[in-house]
Image: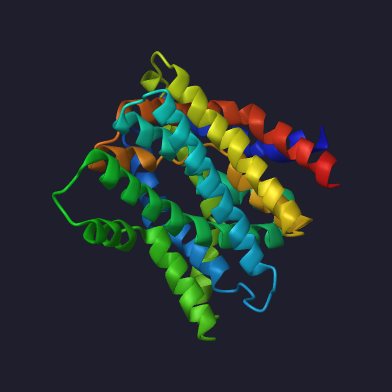
Amino acid sequence: MELFIAILPVFLLLMMGGLLQRWRFPFDGFWQGVDKLVYWCLFPALLFSKTSVIDFANPMLLRYGMVLVSALAVTALVIFITARWLQVSAPTTTSMLQAAVRFNTFITLALAERLYGAEGLVLAALGAAVLIPSVNVFLVVSMVSMHGQKQQSLAKLIAKELLRNPLILAIAAGLGLNALGLTPIPIVSDMAQMLAQATLPLVLLAVGAGVRLTTVRAIGASFWLSAAGRFLVFPSVVLLVCYLLEINGLAAYVALLFGIVPTATSGYALAKQLGGDADSLAAFITLQTAMSLLTVPVSIALAHLWLG
């Protein structure tokens, strides 16, 4: 009950965002503008603020990254093999991959801060720094390979996808300046920290406002397979590799969050751009977000019982 009460505000903000959008408050188009503000300004500031203070001397960092990349690789492999066995079309397969390996960074960081405080938020930002570039490169390569998109070279598509992503650029700037010993930067770091403090409540409202129940139509095996990859395979691999690498405590809990939150809404734009099944992915995003109301508290409670 204490755990449920701790994370309930996160989901109430999501629901509140959905209601505000439904009521068109404060006016039509407002939340689309908030989406842009969060994506291009507030969330990059948060990621820069947190990655610029990561302690690279921590010997656990490499193993922590290995946990997340291993979960990404195994989950993708399971989805791909099962989709081929079921003879799912290539566009739907890549949308299933997106639904299984992408994670909602906003919800992850909000939960990390809510449950584990400032230290949990730093670990979550580090996990995002590992996974966001890895996921984007993997998905671009997969979609270009499977859909036969030959208008541009693969290298150009990957570079374009990475260089136009403000989250990746903010992570690169934070880690790079941190590694050079140039942080904190007077005034700039203070501004980033102030913007970061405004990010998480606003972003949860915006995520809730972006859920579109009208996208949900007939769903079949492809949805349940992608949901199993997201909510079962990914977190199971995280816990297994944490056990094998002797990672426990806060780091294991935060790593687990990346496998129990719903998939990211940003996958829809990539599906449209590279020929994926965008309609199915829109339904996957909506349904996973609804499912996470149950999967998140149950998964965290089970993890606390198992890990102590």
